[in-house]
Image (cartoon, rainbow, N blue to C red; front, side, top):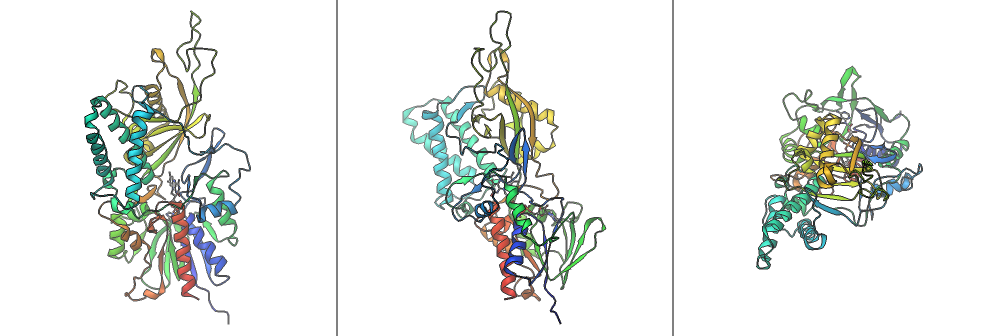
Length: 505
Ligand SMILES: Cc1cc2nc3c(=O)[nH]c(=O)nc-3n(C[C@H](O)[C@H](O)[C@H](O)COP(=O)(O)OP(=O)(O)OC[C@H]3O[C@@H](n4cnc5c(N)ncnc54)[C@H](O)[C@@H]3O)c2cc1C
């Protein structure tokens, strides 16, 4: 008689789910019956490579955050994604820009050496200290940074820089705070736990983008699985996990599945939506029995923010030949000069400048930068309220908001524009019911221990059936030190596959 194989159903075909499937199929030999159910019509989850204006762009995961020892870098290499087979220009193909132009609202260029760089160094030094666990004062990150700026200004007080420079410095710190908001996804840095920042780790080495596209790495994982392992278009609505086998019920009347082990990889956003009374209507999963208290509390306490990317195609406005033959105040007033490349524009919003047309949601972005030097495609990152609001706006309103911002920071004579926004493309992670946000952070009131609780299987040790590992949890929000990244997703998928491999050893 052939022994029945343990049936493993993995919910979600993002990096975590596909890594778990890959490990179980590769290392497990033929020991498991593995199915990956994915609600959408594609694999990849928050990894989504796309094209815009002749460029390869990432709508989700963008950077491999440290290449030395990173399993995601190794995966991209194995997938052949570290070369660009289509020779498409891609984001940051030339690495980090080393020359930025920092401008205050209204168009005044901020002195890099005297003002912008010292504040950047102060900010970087403080965040490095926080991440090395050396920050003092407790509370949230924003208060910590503002304390640092006040101390810096007080120390220098004898030197007597004017109030105006202090205002610019405040605006510069706010600019870096906006950067930190997109890096962490915390809407309000006051809500980002300082102690947990000391636990977060990237891999060592360079941060790089993926020439052939991040999605290629995902496709590589899918291709390595036995045919038919990934089943698209199956949305889990209800999970009955009280006794073995667990039963998975899907939307649209798709037949239920039974599983000895369910590996859940859905985002923390989807899990948060699962806590409410009407989980199903909120986009969540109905758990029967409900998730135990410790798990519910960890899900509720941890932060899951919104980060969106806005790509825009820009064209220089050519000077119109006036009746006197002079330029019309476009990019140059000298018609013979070719228009310069769009700068790596860092923006210090002062809030009271004359250009009141800049909408509030543009004020939450740190920069508008070409995706590589000389590119006509520029990118702005948004976090929190601004990122969520961006999703609700029609294209023409977004274009108007960006245009007003460009006109304020890079003004041309006689109120004309130097750059025109031709078209845009943006991500919409908050309103997508399969994500309900972008990535996780440790909120004030939570801690790294909640990330560990997220990773605990059910039933919990000590409860009846605890040895069964009936429901396992993976995904970026289950990794204590790498949360929020693709490598957290990868490592957590490998961790839960290993748990099952050990169980059946
Ligand atoms: C804008 C943005 C920028 C980012 N930048 C970076 C970066 O530069 N570097 C980096 O390392 N990371 C970055 N990330 C984070 C990274 O993309 C994620 O951490 C990682 O991809 C998460 O993978 P996962 O497998 O844990 O979850 P997901 O990718 O969310 O996979 C979960 C899957 O579950 C599916 N699903 C959801 N609900 C159901 C259901 N009910 N039934 C069935 N299937 C369901 C979803 O469709 C999805 O495919 C970024 C993310 C965003 C949004």
